[in-house]
Image 1 (cartoon, chains in turn blue, cyan, green, brown):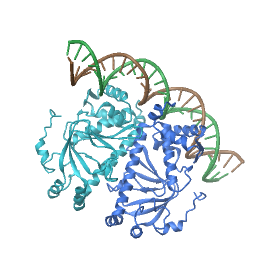
Image 2 (spheres, rainbow over the protein chains, first blue to last red):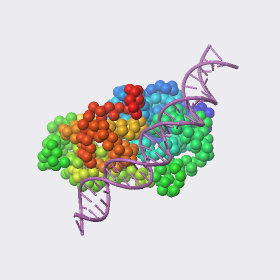
Image 3 (tube, chains in turn green, blue, purple, orange):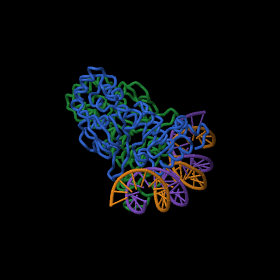
Image 4 (cartoon, helix red, strand yellow):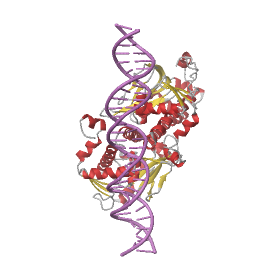
Length: 253
Length: 253
DNA sequence: CGCCCGGATTGATCGACGTCAAGCAGAACG
DNA sequence: CGTTCTGCTTGACGTCGATCAATCCGGGCG
């Protein structure tokens, strides 16, 4: 993280939303300077989580929304039998906790995958400000929307795509989000384990491992443990296409 | 429908939420008489949809929420390649369109699976009333919550359950919702085709057909085209258990 | 009644992915 | 430096569910 091409001034980040490098990607996006200061008043001192620590646990009472400043987290649900389903991975500039908005209780657990720093927005204060700033309200709705749409895509992936397409879509999504962060979209650092990736994709770890190897052999990726370089974005994008579409084009399975 | 054990007085239903047999299951649940009248003022004349007709289409501008009074609908998304993923089935007393709340655009299509009658709640009016009635606002949030939780369950099912467990969970869910409607939970009438069921479960139609046959042979169900009787709710519930749990109990796969 | 047509069922076969098992590599630790 | 542990990779094999194909059944229609 610390030797990447983008050097982040942590002190600057600490000061305010207005000064935060992420503010165009986050809840404040699209609101004006004055409103931004108003929002700032609701942001509590940020928290830092070490790898493996929980930001909130499934069933916890809902108190605040969170925004990732640096690092990354995973969210997952656990059923009565202790089986886990990973729901998503959360990168800097992305919001956590909106699924609890509706029920005053977190329906999932959020766990840091590496040392991460997080803004906390206590909801009672946020709610009041949202009531006063329609633009912020709209942005909050847009942010919730993003979650719903993501859930739908995840469902379509689980229901209709084959293993290789799933991994391709996953990598493409990570690359897109890297690009949003002005990072090199061609050089990914996977903070999640192969187990988490497999679980998220509805596969087992051996299958994911084999797919990485196969895509490396095909010259699409260069894989070295947690670091993945995308050598052929065009081929990767092709693999994201649906199985049915590939069949229609007369390609091999 | 018309020869079922529950005879519904359509004229009574038409009059108002207060007189509607479903109002304890629907958006008005938990709000008081006066508030109910206020809500009534926002409910536009109900619409009737014939089988195969669309209530709204993926991408449509969002104008209103809908509640199913009678009949049933399916919701689905369609990707660029025309592949369909069925997201859910909507029964009387259940709400449609909340996923569009957040984005002012419907992210899915809703299609009637049989002749259905539907309440329409224009959103501008509803929004105003929700602003005045905190109890209604809470109930609206609760209803959105139900959708999020349902999406999560659907995801877990797709990611972790085997074919037979998926069908069992599906039937169990239908039975539970029948019970909520004070219908006989042991006698289901499937308004959706085998294709829709299969798609919803992330399977193909042949697999679903075979599973029905197998569960009938096991004495769990009595299946006759669209009518399904649950003969052994206990065994059905067992099949809903996770594969891992079954393995832990030392059962056969 | 015979015919057709779409949905559903059933069987035979195939293949993608899971399971089981072995081996490997990097990190942590003494 | 070796040991151990954990996460990852690779191979061999089995199986669940998809695919392909035939048939059945009920409904609509001439």
